[in-house]
Image (tube, rainbow, N blue to C red; front, side):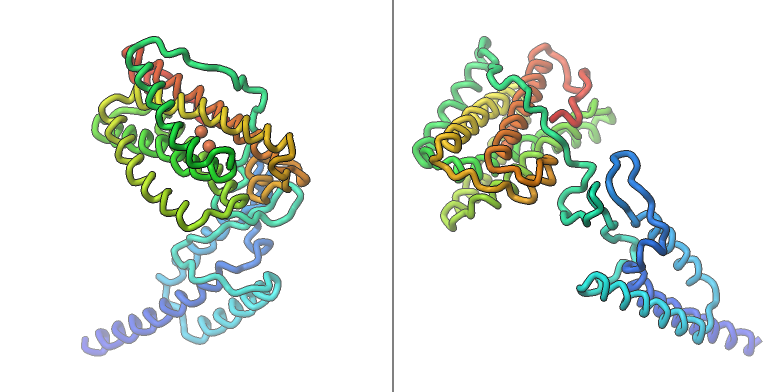
Amino acid sequence: MNQMVARAALRRLIGGRSCSRYLSTSTVAVVRPFEETKAVLWRGHGWGVIGGAEWRRAMSTAAERTSTTTTAPAVEEKDRKEETVAEREKKKEGGEVMVSSYWGISRPKVTREDGTEWPWNCFMPWETYRTDVSIDLGKHHVPKTFLDKVAFRTVKILRIPTDIFFQRRYGCRAMMLETVAAVPGMVGGMLLHLRSLRKFEHSGGWIKALIEEAENERMHLMTMVELVKPKWYERLLVLAVQGVFFNAFFVLYVLSPKVAHRVVGYLEEEAIHSYTEYLKDIGEGKIENVPAPAIAIDYWRLPKDATLKDVITVIRADEAHHRDVNHFASDIHFQGKELRDSPAPVGYH
Ligand SMILES: [Fe+2]
Ligand SMILES: [Fe+2]
């Protein structure tokens, strides 16, 4: 009996060792060449190669193996083999081996349509799009009700300090305003998310639509930051504005989502106006029409020789889409309905 217990303990000890070894080998598995993991094609979008799914399968196999008894020499041989693969991959990549991905989390290898490697982690090819620039930029919601007029006047008043502070420095102005513009979608989406949880009800896609809007606005900001390097006092202003605006908009959305969406609709109308002035200054040569940042070319699928003018044109079209979405959302509320009663414009750009 004692012998059996001793054997079991010894077996467990060996098994434990081999498991910890597998932790180290799994570190290497993340850099296994994707040809070896039979990379799959992202057919839906015609975009490049993704190795993640197949790699995860390799990981689960490794996990299964850990549950079986593996002898130490076999593991050592496996270690050596995996290390060779890692070294080969490291040489190919010309960089450092990726840190452990034992948990199955790794950046899948993605390529562009032309086969070059996808350089962004913050967005993937299937999240990119070509903006519909044919959208009517002149649409305006005429304020009729008292609340509409309050929303309209609020936005007009908010514009005064912005005009005074930035004047015709449209790069700085756009950068600053985008830090604000990305807030309402996130607040609205978050509150609808919480409501959906509280009331056990669907959102009609509006959570996604509003979060998409916030993400789109954040990409505007990431683009503008490439063009305009913010100074320390502008960063300080962003902190102050975000602190005030987030809380103010949160309270407004809780009290009256219809006014909140109307305010955003009018803010977007102002954004269209600002970007139109920006384009006018570029056209008149007051602002240099520099090459478009790489992030903008990939995000909006612009031609490689795209310029600042092209970037501002697509951003302005995005703002027009946001204007329509938010006025539409406000109209739904004004009709005494909930947003979920109307299908959300998910993916509307
Ligand atoms: Fe924007
Ligand atoms: Fe916008």
